[in-house]
Length: 335
Ligand code: PMV
Image (cartoon, rainbow, N blue to C red; front, side, top):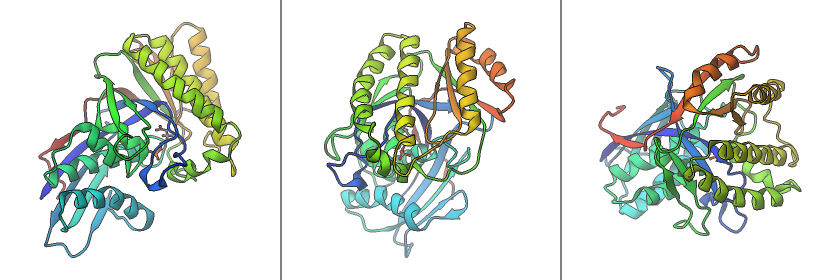
């Protein structure tokens, strides 16, 4: 019972930050709807994807998960089991498993490795166990590992309904990768691991006095941005995404304890993007739980925009992105 999958990462345009207090925190049911672009890295060796193989067999005496050569233990293993255990239960299988997974990009650098990781795990496990699920149903199991993974099951532009139960908190596609013209350049200013993972950060959102306002606005903006994507309105999508990113970081910075994911260079880049935009090249920024900046632009402008970003002293490297296709099952196994 072996299967493998490749899943892409995603960049949130409307952010998920904080779990709903009305549900078991292990379900990762968010406090607001969110929207993202599933991303495909155009650099020859970095596509921002995870390749995972999982095998269920009575030959294994215990569950084992290996990510990039590291045998997972503690909270990391707990999160893998958070996806696999309910699927094993659903399929009525009690075999142990071996899982092996590798990312083609650095983990924990704000490039959303948990999104592609748990999406790949959910797809591979569902397929290995022979469960007949729709993509929406698979997305609910990816969510049990990491909230943002819910959206990585689909390609293109994706809407995650917050829902109010395990079954109703799922992601659906807004449109495919070729139906809305938006690309991005990731400006990498720092590749080290961040101090506080988003898994832990979600717990502190409620301590910010601005969180209620962020939840209310995000709920409205999720619907507005979906409409703007379907209307092919890049300017509107960019403006809403930038606003929403600032709301999330305002909450992070005003939480207790405060979370400052930005580095001084992050602000420098924000200022540069504002300047480039003023000079006539339309672009917008968004930043996840890390210091690196995703710069959104139209596909025709991506090379010009990359050149301008690479001229900025603090930019170590750039990764070009376009919307990815759906994540998928592959016959290529890692073991
Ligand atoms: O899926 P998590 O727990 O890694 O949370 C993701 C949080 C953000 O990346 C900051 C926002 C988002 O919606 O992806």
